[in-house]
Amino acid sequence: MVKSIGAFLVFALGVFLAVPPLPVQAAPQSLVVFDDVRVFDGTTLTPPMNVLVEDNLIAKISAEPIITIATATRIAGGGRTLMPGLIDAHWHSFMARPTMAMAAAAPLSFITLMAGAEAEATLLRGFTSVRDVGGPAFGLKMAIDGGVIRGPRIWPSGAMISQTGGHGDFRMLFEIPTTPDQLSYPERIGMSAIVDSPDEVRKRTREQLLQGASQIKLTGGGGVSSPYGPLDTVQLSVEEIHAAVEAAANWGTYVTVHAYTSEAVRHAIQAGAKVIEHGQLVDEATAKLMAETGTWWSLQPFLADENAIQQPDAAGQARAAEVFAGTDNAYRLARKYNVKVAFGTDVLFDAALAARQGSQLATMTRWYTPAEVLKMATADNAALLALSDRRNPYPGKLGVVEVGAMADLLLVDGDPIADIGLLSDPAKNLVVIMKDGHIVKTTLGAN
Image (cartoon, one colour):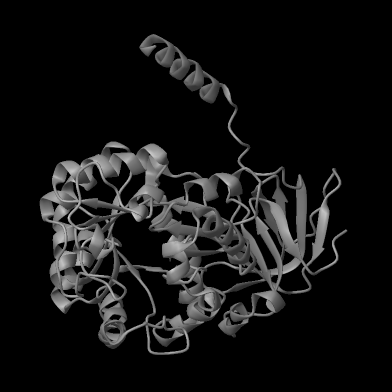
C-alpha cells in the first residue's frame, strides 16, 4: 500500500512537471505606433513625438514620422500625453474590495472572484503594476499572466508574517491557545502566517518563496487596523526579522517590514530589511538613519480626508488620528534627508476607496510637485520593484518611456503635470491603456 501511494505521488508529480507553463501574456499586437504624442520623460513633457511599440517593447521614439514596413496599429495621439503605466507599491489584491466581514466569513472562491474583478478595475485605472504586500495573490497573478483575466503585473509577497498578537494575527480569541498542528483560517488560505521564533520565521519565509513570492512582508509593529497589537508595540525581534532577511537573500530577494514607530523601524533596519512600510510616527534621527542606510520608505498619504479608511470603532479611529497627524511630518523628513520614497495606497476593505486610487495619487501634490509625483508612481516605484532581483517576475525596464523599456503605457487626454487631477477620472481621461504591448483599453479610433 505504501509503495502504491509512493508510486502514485511520483506519477502525479511527473504529470504536474510535464504540464507546460501558461504563457506570460496573450500575444500583443506586433507593431503599434503612437503618432503625435508628448512624452512624460520623468521631469517634463517633450515636444510632439512618435513612439513605436514592437511586440512588448518600446522600439523607437522619434520627432520624425515613423514608417513601418509591416502593417501597424496607429493611434492618433493628437498632442496628448504618453506616460508610463502607474505603479502602486503597497496594494492588497484580496483585501481591497471585500468588506472586513466578507473577508473573514465568505467562501474563498467568492473572495477570489472579487479579487479578479478588482484586478481588472485596477488595470483600467491605469495601474499596470502593483506590489502586493500581503495575501494569497499567487493564483491571481498566474491567471493574469496566463491571459485568463485582465489585471496588473503583480509582485506578490504571499502571507504576511506576524508574531502572535501581531498586526497580521487575525485569529479569533476562541482559537487561543493554539497547538502546533492547528492553523487558523487566515493561515490556511495564505493571508497570514504566525511565527514566534527565528526558526518559525525562516520556515514561513521559505514557504512564501516556494510559492513564488517576489519579496517577503513582515509585520514589525502594531497598525491602525490591528485586531490586537497596539500601534506603539514592537513586534518580532531583531533575530526573527534577520532570519527572514537571510532566507530571502538566499533566494536573491529582500524583506519589507510594516512599522510605524521609530523603535520598530530601527529594529527592522538593524535586522537588514530594505524597505519600511508606513513609518508615519518616526522621529528625525530615524529618518536620517533610513537615508544613511539606503532604506526605502514606502509611505502612504494617510490623511483625515475623503480618502481615509473608515475605522469601525473608537480605538481604531484614535489610532488612525495618530497616524494622520504624523503624515505631514513623515513626508517633510523624507524630503529633508532625501530618503527614497515609494508611493502606495494600502486600500483595505473598501471598494469605493479602491476606485479612488488616482485621487490618492493626486493628494501627493501636498508635498511634491506633480512631476515628482508622477515620477514617484512610475520610475521610482519601478526601481523599488527591481529590488526583487533574482525573484523579479518581470525582468526588464519599467516606469519609463524609453527605447528598450517594456510597453506599459497610458495615453492621457491632457497634461497631467499641469493638472494631475486628470488621473482621478481614469474612465474619462485615460484614452489608451497598454500593458506589455497589448492595448487593453482605447476610446480612440486606431488604424
